[in-house]
Structures are given as C-alpha cells and as structure tokens.
Image 1 (cartoon, one colour):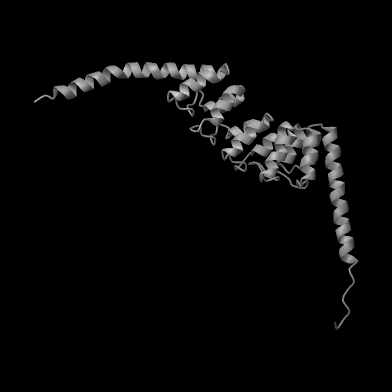
Image 2 (cartoon, rainbow, N blue to C red):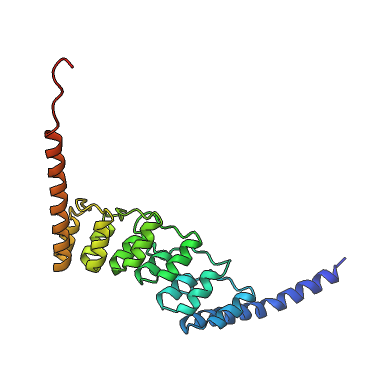
Length: 237
C-alpha cells in the first residue's frame, strides 16, 4: 500500500530544493558583495541568519582572508569577533589571517587574532617574517613579546631579519638586531642578512648589518681576551 503522507512530504521537499538553492546563491552573492564593499551591516545580517562566516569565494579564499586582502577593515572587525569564524585558515600560499594583518602593520587586528589563539609560530613563513617584510616595528615588537621565534626559518631557511634587510625599514632591522636576531645565519642560497641588504640595495640596512657584525666581533674578542687572561691554577693545588 502506498504511503501517501510520505509521498506528500517528498514532493514538498523536492519542491523546496530549488527555492533553497536560489536562496543560498543569493545569500552567497550578497555576502561576498558586502565584503568587497566593506559593508559590515550586510555581513552581520547574513551571519545572524546563519550564513557560514568561513565560506570561501569562487577562487577558494576564505571570507576573512579576502576581507584582509581587499582590505575591508569594517568587515574584518566583524569576522574576527564572530565566534564561529575560524581564525586558523590558510589560503593557497599557506598564508594565515595573522600573516596578512602583520604584513599590513595592523596591530589592532594582530592583537585580536592572537587573542583568538592565532598561531604565531606556524611552520614555514611566519607572521614575524611578514611584519619584518613590511617594516612594522610595533607589530614586530608585539609578536616578539608574545613568544614569536626571532630566527624562524622559512622553507628555504630565510629569517625575518633577512626579509627586513631586503624589504623592510631600517627601524625594523635595528629592532630585530637589538632583540637578538642572528646575523650569521645563512639560508638555503647561502645568503646572510647582510647579503639580502646588499642585494636589495638598501644602504641604511647594510650599514646597520655591518655595525651589528662589528659589535658581535668585538664581543667575541672580549670574551676570548677574558678567557685567556684568567690565572692558571698553580700545579699541585
């Protein structure tokens, strides 16, 4: 015997599917349109209706990453503060939201992301590499204060100091050196931070590197002198 009630429910459900698909498609378009126009109210309304804040655009970029890249600062604030937003997402280049915020020098976003447990010391390229590249001293200082590894090595062995030397500001280079960055490290191409500064034709950064190396050499010389000047214990004592 046919179960007419069951058939009726199936017909209703099948009839609902096109409406649901159209509804989602409309919300999807509205969501990314709101991001591109930096419309926080539009994004918030959709999120309150249950739209997933981690939805990716047709190019595969998570919403938060896209908002950071646009940039859409008002939408970024909404997405970071939204409880369901996944902070530890990656794009195709293995970049995280924290890395993009660090590259832009957006200390406020960096702090909010770290407060939501963003990974400061992710493997490979790190937020500190990106902050150093942009020459953003306040972000560099904040990351170091929150246990960022100062000599973190990228997949090819490049350190934050190397990136600062070639692309960043003299202030960023100086801060990293004073914070204890290793000037002697070589990356996979056998290049030091000084080599990076020279390749980037950055006279101020070259001078800072050379001064840092001179000071290191002087410290080593003093250590050796102190060690050799220690009195030798008398024989038999």
